[in-house]
Image (cartoon, rainbow, N blue to C red):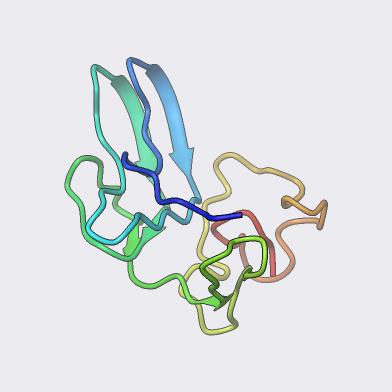
Length: 121
């Protein structure tokens, strides 16, 4: 199977109201945009991490840095997208919308704070 790169922003609300976008890791395609804003109102965007600066939404607690995944592969089914121990996304997420488990069902937070992204380390 050949994997393609999407031609639009990675995570974006569209014609929405009262949306909360917290604790995400957003990695756009090379030269791509993190997000866009198409007729939205009352968007709360914060505690996200992305490798390239953007100005559409910017949270006071966003981090612009490489998220430091363990093993990035061109075929996403072969990569390990958990966070390396030195990732700035570890223990730096918000507790404002407290999800009890990560994508694999692991309890969160595990230690000093919530991790940003789908996996709790």
